[in-house]
Structures are given as C-alpha cells and as structure tokens.
Image (cartoon, rainbow, N blue to C red; front, side, top):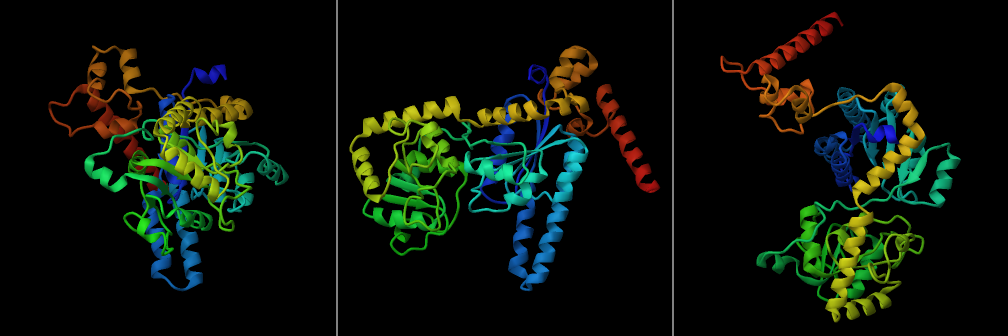
Length: 435
C-alpha cells in the first residue's frame, strides 16, 4: 500500500449504455480523478439509441436477438480497443457494462486487473451468476447472504461496496421563484413507480405531494405526477430535494404492499438526499442503521401508519427537521462519498492483486504541469506547455488535441509533436499494408 501511495494508477471505468448505473460510473470516474489517478471513462451511452431502436423497428424475435448479440459484440470490441489504447492497470466495469466474456478474458490475459461493481439487487437480477466468476474482483451492495452465494459459485474475491454521494454534484441549492413554483411541496418522491411504492403513495394523496419519475399510472396518483412520464437528471433531482420539506425514500419491491422486510440493497438516494441537505424519511432497509443514526440523521418508518405520523410530526417541527438534515449531510460528507468508496475498492484490489500489478509494472503518466516543472518553465518546451491546461496527461494522444495548424509561427516544441505524430501515423499505415 505504501508503494502504491507514491504512484498514480491508470484506471479504466466502463459504464453501461443505459440505466441507473450510468451516472454511478461517472461519479466513480470523478472520484478516482480527484484522488490523483489517471482515469478514462469508457462510455457506450452513445450506442443506446441504436440498440434500443432494434425492438422498435424489428418484429421478428430471432432477428432481434441476433442483432442485439451482434451489436453487443461490436460495442464490447469498441470498449476493448479504447482500453488497450489507455493501457490501464485496473478496469472497473459497472453493472450492465456491455463487455462480453471474451473481452473480459482477453483483458485478464493481458494482466489487467478486472473488477465488476454490481450496483443492483441480486435477488432481482440473476445475471451475476454468469458475470461474477469472470472477473478478478466482484464488488456489490448487499453484504451478508450474497457473499455466501458468491463463494458457492467460485467467486474468490468479492466485497460489499455501497453507493455514495458526490458532494460537488449532490449539494444544497437555492431555487428561483419560478423553480419554487414547480418544486416546492411538503412531501416528494423521485423514482420509478414500483408496485410497493404505488401502494404507499396512494395513502398520501391528501398531502401536498409531488412525484417525479416513470411508471406512475394509477389514477389516484396522476394529479401528483409532475411533468408527466419522464426521468430526471442530477441537476433536476437537486431541485426536487431543495423544494421538498420531506423527501420520501422507499426501496423498491414488485411483490410487497409496502415495505420489503428483506430489503438490504441500500439505494443511492439515501446518500444523495443527505449530501444535498434534504430531510428524508426512509424505510428501515437492512444496514441503514450502520451508516446513519436512524433517529437523529435519517428517521425511518415501518408502515403507512407510522409514515403518516412522522410526516405530520416533522411538517410541524421545522427546526428539528432542519437539524436532522444538517446532521445527515455532515455524516454523508464525512463517511459516504464516492472517494471513500473508490479508496475501499483500491485497498481491496491492492491487498489481493498488488503483487501482480507490481510485477507487470505501473505505467507512469505525468501531466503537462509536472513535465514543465522537470524541464524548467523558462525552457522552450516549458514555455509552450505553459499555454496548455496543466492537468493534461503528457502523452502524444492528449497533446494532439492542442496542436494548431503548422505555420512559420509554430513554436519548435509544437513542431516536434507534429513530427512524432506523423511518424506514428506512417508506422501504423505500414503495418496495415503488411497485414
């Protein structure tokens, strides 16, 4: 660990095309960068419109399956090519990342440490059985029974790493008068309309209730659904939290009338609402009491009756409500940021695979600012690098972005980078012709 504290790691984060783990991939990337590591986000989100259109435009199920398989293989190869260009020591794939078994195998053959972060409920999504044994490390969000299940299928290295908050994005904001008209309410819920959520919220329609999200079709709830059937991004979610006196959190279930007594997959909303300074009432998801004080930071409810009682109480005790929200935010920032989670991941990976990484060697990539300090700020190269952002990795690929058109006024260092790029392109062309 001491050795790795002295070196920046090169880490690739691979996100999904679509879904709830997409923003989490970006939060993780941001956290790793803030920790000083060299990080690239492999983001296949751009492929989702094409992938999604297959079922819309094609009716034959066999053709749909063939096209989806073909596109998944293509996107996986596209991700693999970017990973090889970056040459990381570690790859962390998020749930639903479109990496095929072959791609993961090829990464491991290159001695790249592969990790998967399963930020989904193992009881609802069974594909973990096929995914977990493929990776060097399998992270998940449900400690306990799930760890035993992973042991039973031969997944040797696994650990529970919960989701978290990004304090730079999940933060208190002040609404404009126009935004207050849209978002201000006594009680809000933001999320998809799962069965248990629908049943509970049908019992709250006499409050000043506002709902955001998809799949809210019940006639009793439709008047409370804001802006119709659509999702929301992080920026809008912060407005929802800011405008709500009480933010309701209820972990989803497709079979329970209300609270799922076995719920143990703590959702990101727990941490995001807290970080944003919002007051929330949450169902008693298993493990929540190990993360927050469930009286002084995130109060919980056990059924609709207790929920209504707490809504009534906290609506009439504004000062107490604000003090609880303040303490929850303090706890979130102190213990539950994505930097905390990223460090947990790296500690586990280094503890179990640090030797393998060291035998392969860590590729050290310095920034333009670091190189400028080494060569001297007043040298020709130092002066030219001073015109570039100082956090840009000092590689040909990244420097190419800042090369201007050649002219008689082009500085000598910039000409050298032009020459090296031309040599590389020429070499690649020769290799292609030989192949």
